[in-house]
Length: 202
Image (cartoon, rainbow, N blue to C red; front, side, top):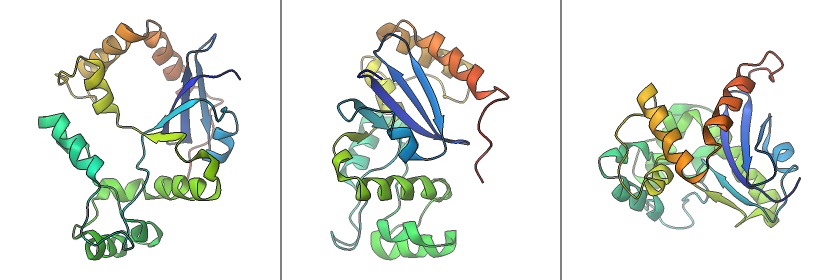
C-alpha cells in the first residue's frame, strides 16, 4: 500500500484500522496489532486511541502523566472523557481488584473499570512497542474528543458521541476537512455488520 494517514482503535474483533490520503479510503479489521501493522509503511503517520508511555515505580510514585492533565484542561467540561491509564505494574495483574490495588500503591489512585476493560489492549500495544522498537515514535497516542475539538476551531462539541446528534456533529466536522468522511463512515458501518466479519474476540 502507498503512504497513508492511519487511525487505529480497539474493536470487538480485535483492532480496527482506517487509512485516508491514498487513492481510496481503507478500513481493515485485525485480531492483533502485529498483523495489522504489517500492512502499514513505517513511513506513514499512525495515531492510536490507546495510552502509550505508562507511569511506573521507576519514574516516581504518585506521578500522573502530564499529557492526561493537559488534555483534561483543554477539554474543559468534557474532561471526564480522559480517563487515567493504569501503571505498567497493573497491566499484568489477573484481576481488577489486584490491578486496582497495585495502581493505588504506585499512582495513589485506584483503577477505573473503564481502564481495566482495555488493559488487554494496552498490554498488547505495550508489548508490541517493546518488541518492535522501530515503531516507537511512529505510532502516536491520540484522543478522539480532543481531536474533534481541535478540528472544530477548538470549540467544544455540543452533543455526546453516543447520540445521533453527536454522531452527525462529528461527521460534519470531519467533512469540513475530509469531504469523503461520511462515505467512509458508511463503509465502516457496512463492514462492521457484514456476515463475513471476524468472530468476536473472547
